Image (cartoon, rainbow, N blue to C red; front, side, top):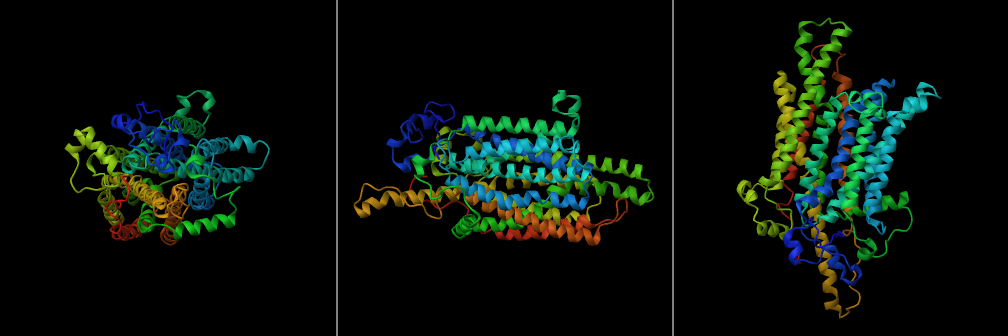
Length: 551
């Protein structure tokens, strides 16, 4: 998707401004359809503005993951009910993301296919998170405590609905707006996610009520939710205002979907989209199924893992601590776990900054690679490692994760546990980069082939009037494919949660009892899944096939 930027905009590279005119849309209806879709090379500033919204989204995610569970427990929820609440993420990911992706693929709003959904999802998410933060005051003033818990339960699912509306459309916007630079664009998005994690962790570790105005709230969770809402709104506004989509009616014509997509149509479209996936995307989704099964326990239990290793020798030394002593001990362990997550976030950020300098950009288009060479990227030539491609960086991250998870059950030193959790920051950084770059490159390849066939058809038929290619199962489906990719990830999360519940039910010991190995067993099983993902990742193509057009 081409953006409505002026050709003199500093967001476009100098070479792009000087000699390439197919990115402008000053008279869009006067230009051939294929010229509108094939985009030029974008500058680093443009990619940063394009991905900054994902960083704001990650701040909201981090607040939910780090502080949401303690808050819900403080409302009187049991851990069993909390487990059902935490299914909101994968359930909404499986249902909402593919649906929203397909709706945005077929949208024909004059100001773009993706941005209306981003705006709507942001408003919904902010309303939900603020209602959750104030649910005790809003509902508790007129209702029983059980109704407060029910309202909080619904608010979490509503929040996940909003967040899962924003994510696929922001990711699809990256594919639409920087089709020739998927490694660079998704590397920038990974960097934004790392910054969002660090901001979220730092905000959670500071007493915000003592440093923010009274209208942020009188509790830490209220202040966190208000802070996250402001960051999310601010970053989304930046992306929406600075990144403009061309009118999709100009490019794609009339949508094949009329009205709101019903469930029957949705499932039919989903099955059709899955059946039309390229071999590259099918392989990637299979890799993600096992890789995410392995990685999700790290996201949810890393701090608990470090804390349990910290408290274990103290429990063996004094197995009869009173509740107050146990609370103080576990608080110290939790701080060790937080330190490990902070180190993880720092390494993730370092990887997202240094990775693009070290990795050969095999998934960017030939035009983008030539642009870099013409610009004389001295630092890129100095640090880039020959043969170190994004696929190999991904496989290395999977090997690292498999090794760490397989030895995790046998670790007894808290320093080693902290180091292992920190090292997984590299894996997280590649997770947020490689799969989306590969998906974007695959879509660019499919689009290029489709438009080449469209341009050749008049030469074969002798008809110069109809140059509009038919909508096929592999065209214009970035949103749907990202949704299907997320379905694979969320299915893995559900499976991982199920295995964890079984293991915890069999091996978990009461709090304060030494010798609890249940979490180590969960991580060990995850390590086996990571090994499978390494083997499957070998089937990912090293670089997109060269299409018949110059993209």
